[in-house]
Structure formats: C-alpha cells, structure tokens
Image (tube, rainbow, N blue to C red; front, top):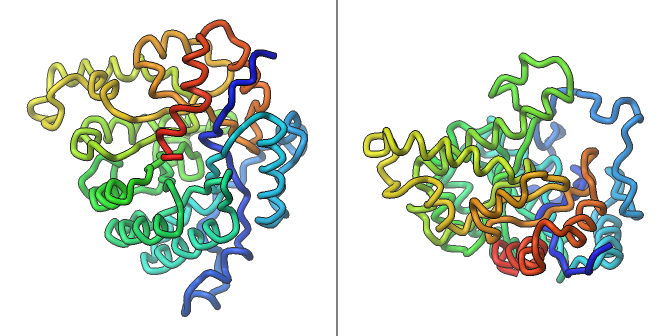
Length: 350
C-alpha cells in the first residue's frame, strides 16, 4: 500500500428508507400510501446472489438499516480507511424528480431533504439533497430551503428530465444554487435510460454499461454547448459516476462542432468547449483502474478530478481503488492530494 494520503469521498451512497421519509411529509401528503418515487425495470443486478456487494470495506450498508445504523457504518468506514469526510448521495430519492404530479414531487423532495438534514448530517457526513426538477421555480425554492438546513449539494439524475440540463428551463435552479453557494451534482443513472435507447438492449450488463455514459454525455453536451459555466460562473458543477477518461475524446468532439457552428449554435462560447472546461470549476469523479488517467490529467488538468468510493454499489471497487490511487506511480504526490482531497473540498465547500 502507498502513503495514506487523507481522502474525501466525493460520491458515496446511503440506502434511504421510505418509511423514515414519510414522517417528514407535510399534510395532505402524509397519509398517501403510494411509493414516494417511481419504480424501475426489475433487472437482476446481482445475478441471483452470484454478485455480492463489495466485501472489502468490512462494514456493510444494508437496505434494511435505518439512518442511525448507516451513519454508524459510514463513520467506521471513514475511520478504517483514513477518509476525512464523505458526500452521500441517495439511492432512490433522486427519482422523485420523475413524479408527474408536480406538487407531490415538491412535497417529497422537501421531506427527503428534511430527513437527510436531520438524520444523516454529521461533522463528517454530508448528504446530497434532491429537487423537483419538473418545476424549476419550486426546485429553486427547495435549494434555498434545504441549503438553510445545512445541505451542501443537490443531485440531478441524468434521466427523467424534460430537457437537457443546459436548457434555460433550469436557469432558476442554477441561479438559486449559485446564490446559496451549493454544488449541483449531475449523477449517472440507468433507471429510465430507455430515454436514450436502452430498451433496444437485452441484458443488464448492456443497459448498465451503455446507459450511464449515454445519459451523462447527453447532459454534458447540453451544459457545455449552452454555456452554463459561462452564464453561471460561480456555480459549482460536477459530473459523477461514469469515470473521467472520456473527457479528452468528448471535448475534442465538442471542439470540432464549435469550430464550424459556434456563432449560430453555441453563441455563449467565445472559445472552444475544451478551453471553457479547463477554465471552469467543473469536477468529474474518477473510478478505479482508469487506464488513461495520466492522459486525461494532461489534457484537462488535475484540478477537475475527484475521488469517489461508490459504496455500496454492486460494481464498486472500494477499498482497492483508494489503495491503487495512493500507491500508483502514474500520478505524483501533489496530484494524488488534489484528487483524493483538495478538489472535493473545493467542490463541496468543506
């Protein structure tokens, strides 16, 4: 094992329970018996038990555990692996944005954020809020309300949205996040990935492999082409859960289209998208065993990359991915410190 550089987990998870969220619902929604967010295609992600949740981190998170138990587990994980703090994304609640009843979606988002603030926030654990994104004005109000409760960031899943995330439809959300000094984290998903063609695939492996980057690239394209980093220069943005080594290829591709069409179709960009990205504060999470990490750092700069454990997802590689970053000779000590700690500290204003 290499030097134990202190780390901040930029993207871990909790397994929130709807029965713990319901008490935070306001009337008249509290007595409603329907699920608090839509379900998903019933893929066999764990191959009937063949694939286990990652075993290496010793302490286990489970869907039956309540908030207090999960907080205890997370604190033990941090202690055991020299991780200072963790940013915790919900596993199901982000899907509340897909609710078609806008008032219900807003009520559920408020209840989730109250639950997170009251039951998960500690000096080392920072849960990420959710927003009712079909109503951007309601989402902006929720940013302000939940930020006042102590939430430092808000999650936007890549699916279930009416437009790409660069569309002016979402400007009230970005304005509110910029004013409240909180991060907006665009997080990969496959729950409604049929929106970009996964209904044409036949196995979970295909859907999961393709669906996450497809949704992320769709929204990254929209954010960059519509000039969100230019229009909201103090907005802290992150793109999470698909790795980072796609950046050189895709920014090159965006640059090609900018060169030929920017005056008419990317009017907010006075320079190439790759230059806009390098000059921005956008962060992207890395995953273990990314073979082109060195090339990616050379292309965009190390200041854009953060570390994530991805606990407790079936395909996570913690703690091996943390040990590999600490030990690798591909990046130097200064770069390790930036990826493992300093960049996440900046993104989440820790």
